[in-house]
Length: 192
Image 1 (cartoon, rainbow, N blue to C red):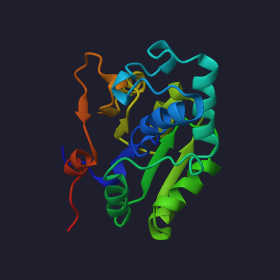
Image 2 (cartoon, rainbow, N blue to C red):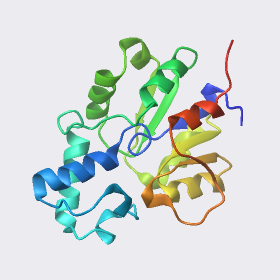
Image 3 (cartoon, rainbow, N blue to C red):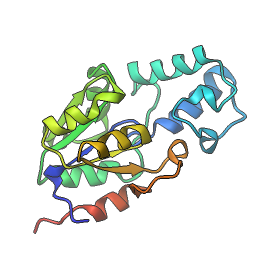
């Protein structure tokens, strides 16, 4: 692939942000659920694969969504470098299913420079199952997401999904996958 930066968009949680690490850490530190690892989260519906009560799973995710900085949500390795580099040439589009924009803006401003943030187009759309509409509205041909169901939905609308490999999206599929931000960088065309 040789993707132009203005043709690709990115999900936030699980792609740019290491939400899995934050979930595992908070589950242990705040709720004393310390007997599992990231690799044990084999479903996007966390409560279906871990022995954690649903209300605690919801509380953990609510904390991450409400105060990403306060809970110590970190970027995935390489994300800051690749997005910052891309933002020097193009507007970077981030489309997240999060319903509230402000905690995301705070998080981006903490981890990215002011110049990079000025080149980020953030869409907090609040619905995992409606991303295709927003991806199309922003004239994107490619989208990187960790939720396999979203990737399948994108594929049916003519958008090329790129699956960011996580333990919860290992079902059998023939979609393009990446394991890290170095691999995403390799998909992008270089502007000289």
